[in-house]
Image (cartoon, rainbow over all chains, first blue to last red; front, side, top):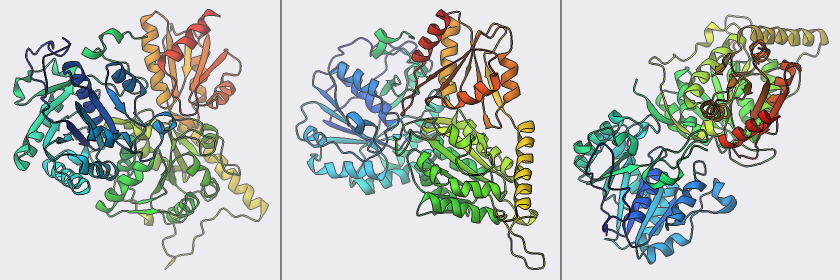
Length: 261
Length: 355
């Protein structure tokens, strides 16, 4: 699926020469995580990466049903400008604390001619919604990856991760096919946090037999560390879910938009 | 202790446990429901109890009853829910009960919306309930400060035998930040050490916890006793923080909660343009840091005050009262759940400087 690089931004990263980006071989990628896992940031960054590097269309759907804070209108506009189709509630419903499952999602699953990324809330509402869509998934059509953050209380050790994953599998009636290590402390993320999370994800991988699909982390931190320690693909992240007092970092996807005013 | 990434609402729940609290009464409402969600599993782990009441009116009365036993108790809610608790809040103040309430404010009036707001300043600081009473009101601007102020709130409630309110706009409850909790958690409070608590009158004189005084002389004494406490709070409990207030500062911003953090970004960026702006952030909204604010505004270099709020202008009434016309005061605010952006505030300041 991943073809030649269309934009140059994803090839050159200061400080670490050749990193291998995630390879997506299925048409549907469901990224599941509780709040604080960073699954939305990972989903948005993965969608942007795919949109920049593959010919076939990319769709992202919001299955994080009950979390209106930190839905970012700006992130939606940016993705749409890149040609990504965004399926999310609009208007007043964008900010409603109601479980809204967009009917278009089912249609997008049924006729995927590219890649569909599902951003799934790790709570019962999100995972049940995913489960309800499962009948339209072909069995070999999808990836379901657990996004892990070792700095979140419920996924800070092996037992916590395994319990969380079991709960998601029980309510979605689907099985995970891989893991994403996305350990972070938002703006306080450092080398130690990323490596510690990678080790924990490795332990979860050994315990469950699930592959580590990729490790994701802030681009600016990845640029300062030796990424050779990661024996899996890497997805550098540029934050799009910002707090009102935070300003954008310069990333590959926003080089033209990094002025402070 | 390793720093954890926590949502404000979860951290508020954990902070109560760190403060030795084992009794929590609440009714769910966005944007604070995660406190209740967190405590449904966390309180049982430490032998505590969460009762989900049938309404916020019932929560208020449960707090009154449970606080009378001398145990540490608290609730969390959001604007409309806090409105429903005003009657019992007035009763608790009148009966000298130590209680902590957290209001994660959403846009109002009425059912309003669920996005961040600071429109409950009047309700918290000027008294939403009836009678001569005040609440100690604390306003955190980060998740870590919410944790620290929660622990302080229970200490102040016990010290003054008075209700303490923490107000945070929706961002405080919903955002994720790194937090640290004390190494050692406080043990559950011991009611036997309290000479007013209803612990069973076996082998001692019965005690009464009440706010009913039909004899006017007795009622006046109760009001004067309350007034004495409020005067003591004004003397000893004011807290505030300054940001980049220097001898060159021309404009002093007054802002609290997460609004103050947006103003810090504004101040940093205007500094790069050579415009010197500073911030006065009250942490206690009652007692307001009056002397401290007045001392800053009358400095020769200060030309203007700019009050910034997520409301149509509430705290500004206190700022005006304190500044007493010594400097011109301007206002910038957004409401309805819209959070002012740093750029909007910068534009406002540039406009002020043109005058």
